[in-house]
Image (cartoon, rainbow, N blue to C red; front, side, top):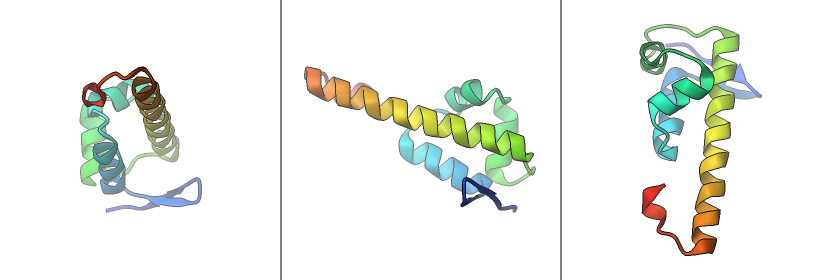
Length: 87
């Protein structure tokens, strides 16, 4: 298992997966945004491979962007009275 620091926060593959799952972000969506192969992300999350610093930064940035976008959608849906279960 590896640990790297991204933005002052220690990140590992399992922490990336935990953050992604808690946020309800699909792996394929994160892969598309981070421009990384789905199998590669799976190996990173399981600790089978160590990502490069650039790869880890792309994953973390993409995950943060997706979480922010999901929150913005939830706020808009709530304001409009739409069900949040679809998000």
